[in-house]
Length: 93
Image (cartoon, rainbow, N blue to C red; front, top):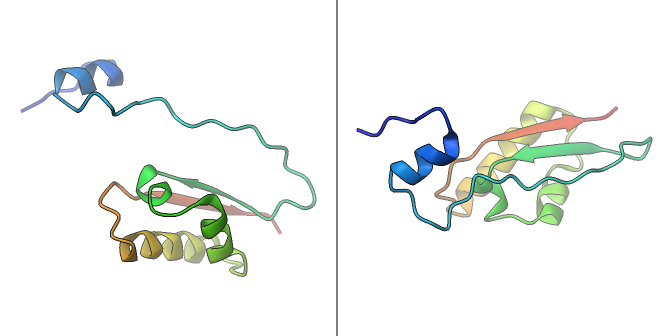
């Protein structure tokens, strides 16, 4: 059994998770304006099998955020993603 200490980074090291795994998120600053359509917040289970453009194209014509999120997860599953898959889509109307 591996108990996580208070620091997530320390827990990863103690529990023997591979060295190449990082807890550093990919961070990007974008301006939201009248032309913004949506934002996709997703875990690496999606991004390891789908590019930003592929994900955008996949949901561009969907008006329901829940439906868009589910479609992206189904896409990751169909591409045999073995990582965790979490996805939130924010749609601007």
